[in-house]
Length: 163
Length: 138
Image (cartoon, rainbow over all chains, first blue to last red; front, side, top):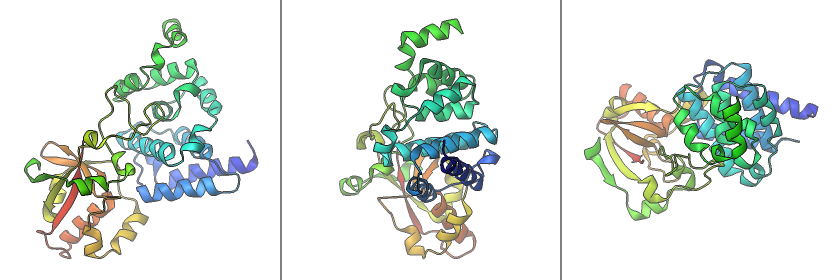
């Protein structure tokens, strides 16, 4: 990643701190979220990937719990990016997310990847990590339903049996 | 709450933006959330099931059962500058909205406007019997 890319990811992390994500009780508005997306994606060298990479880094750095409010924020951030910046979203590289999931991720981070990581860009290992990561949380059934097609993949099934 | 919910006119339903329909709480038939890579579809109007709830401003605080998030101070400050008419106007592109929960509702949009309406009632700046229109949906 370039220095500018690192600055943007850091800037995204700071924005999430400003809305009190670090308390696991973030406070935002649809207008604020809209401005934030525009600010990051229109910055020199900025992209949608910075938003999601910075969000994930913030969830990791602040050890965020998967509260209902955090889940609502994750859903809003995914729906906003996916529906309002669709072409950028479709061309986004998610290798970094697959890499992060290989090293283990908290339930909040797994919930972000559950909603954000497109099926065709998720490795079988990532699907299993997400599935396992939200087990024993109130979002387990949502994960089973959301990943239903991925869980039929023979490679995923093999990993589920082996691990 | 149920008995003060009325159908939304066809004209008003047609003016609801896609963004508003993504406030839907329920998921699709397979249980996948709308507006995400595994379910990119916009919920149909029938799935969204939009209706209008009309509540007295003074009853709002007692009817709220849950909310998506707390109050963002900068947005609260902006909303505080609105006139009563601006605050209460039903905006099809961004309505105050909620999902029925028991005998009340969970807020799904317009958190800051509702917060300000409740503040003005408590401060005596808005009559408690002022009607507030809320988009109720599935």
